[in-house]
Amino acid sequence: MGAAFGRRSDGQSRFSQWWQRGARHRPEQDPGDGERTALLLAAAAAGLPLAPAAHPDGYRCSCDRVGCPTPGRHPVSFAWQTQSTHDRGQVERWAAHDPEANFITATGMVHDVLDVPYGTGEQALRRLADEGVEVGPVAVSDDGRMLFFTTTRGTPEDEDEWWPCELDCHPETMDEHPGLRWHCRGSYVLVPPARLPGEPGLGVSWLRGPEHPLVDPLSLLDALTDAVAVAAGGAGGEADVASWPHGGR
Image (cartoon, rainbow, N blue to C red; front, side, top):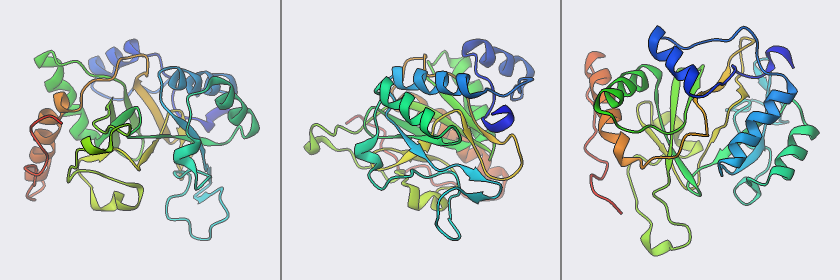
């Protein structure tokens, strides 16, 4: 596979290197087929429900759709929500069947994802570290986003307790949420290692791997929304960060 998939992940040690250098760490080599499968199985072992996704073909998508609006970023099946699984055997079969495929993880079942611009995430991570707040798995996307994996606020087993939020982001509403996106039920994100369309080597990789326990999203929201507001203010814009709930379910 060579440069086909993302950057190497080594969990906490990589996070420490990133923290000390103040920039994303790029390894000398990208993971091959074996490491790709191992990374996917690690995500599945952490309970993240996975499903096969399309992969980039240059600047195009591997799917048959002409002018695909999200090349290499969408599931291959319309039944991705019911198809998603953390079963080791199934993930191994999918990975072996299509060595080029990306994978998505369905949110709102086991976990949610708080998705922010990279600079915002970097600022929030520094604040969280200063305050001693626990941070779970974190992924970095080379299109300039940082993904914070958290416990889910959705309760699919009890529909009466569903907690609505104006920050909910679904695949079809991505462009409407340039700042903070909250991927919950009905949404998904690419799970590392994944390739992005465009220049070779662009992808999605772990900054902190899935071996780190998921944390409650509310413990991260203050730092993330404050960082979004600072970024928006610096750009001369106005940030609306008052719409998310400050209480629990």
